[in-house]
Length: 129
Image (cartoon, rainbow, N blue to C red):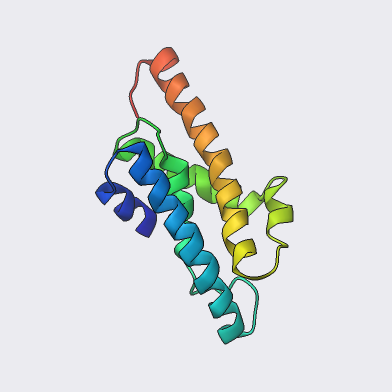
């Protein structure tokens, strides 16, 4: 949910959004790696920066309001849990990069699925998300 709150405050400019995603990935890889060493386990639960970055990727350049953002949240959670290829392989990368990379890939899937949902909602049902 923190990703939705951040999304609400990030300017809609794609360059700014891409920069925010890149900064979160870098900071997340560093901090998740440090957290893994501190907690002595892979992908520790207290680390949520990967989820925040994942939501920004999911909503990146998607023309949605709050309803669409909530649909995006559900799609991201689905793909983050299921981890279709290659997200399942990326999860095996060591350190903080692995923590961030699998969520980034799940978010790419969620972004594409959300685009499809927006298209179907607009074309078939006449709704806007």
